[in-house]
Length: 410
Image 1 (cartoon, one colour):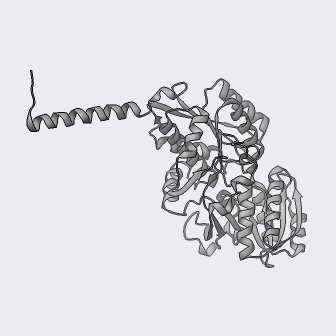
Image 2: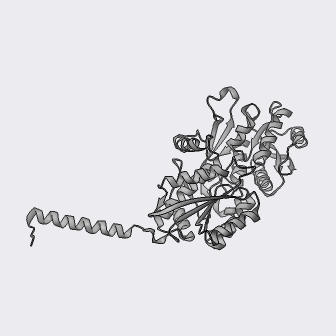
């Protein structure tokens, strides 16, 4: 029989205490029993057609890079990334998501570009108790009256891209605005929020023209903007519409006549397609730009190695959303939607090395940056497109939580 005395007895007691502590910590740490079917399955539901450069396959890459940060494993269970194309149609998106939730054991869905798709799938996720990480749709309704305890909004939204952007530019550029807006809910929401911001800043809206989605000829709309003599011409559209409109503003000489062009929802892929000759001088706001800081460049380097192009802010938001979701699953020990979303709201967000947080209404709060597109001669290397003008603090950019109509606490 072994006996300990003196110093050895003290060491033995310390060892036993240490083992007891390690055992209690191990018991306290979440294991994989809270993972519903033994797999954390995340689905990327995006636009693989007209908007493929904004999100599409690049969003899948971003989600996979986030999973790689966890070695594709959480709580000892594998992380699986799947994807599909919603074709910009809410009914198709809901059909795919329903099959994923009911049969495919999908725990979370992300991207969801296009506001109608985002709202429809977020609604289904709420009914099905699944997590929706909205990194594509811009509508601020997601954190307003249609908020949900299982939905978080990672894209910069219509409120921030209108009210936040307008307030900053009204101080810097001019107070007379003219809007060229796409004729569907996104364009209407942008014009509504931006018009109020213009008025609040002491300015005037000199006119609004609306064009059909996928318009190629903007001549009549841009002539109206030019004839208005507005200081700022704001383009409230996306993708190919923005590309075509900006190219034609150059042809019509809006910038040369002293008007400032603003792309209210413009991606770096749009600027790449337009080219610096035509896009130079345009103002945009974004929460992510690949060359913004060291954290942004680190992600961009990994993304570029696979996609051979720099990530858009949508793709960056997908990465940040999936990464934070997995962090919350790990911390909470479960992929049950309400529980993991509550954990997401507790944990601080690492937004490419910059602080951010998730509000109770699901809105992710981060700073926006105001950029001006560089002149061709100022660009020093590929994709060197933006000049940073200022930072719009998150609490100024996004709608106050008590003003959106979210009733989660009511």
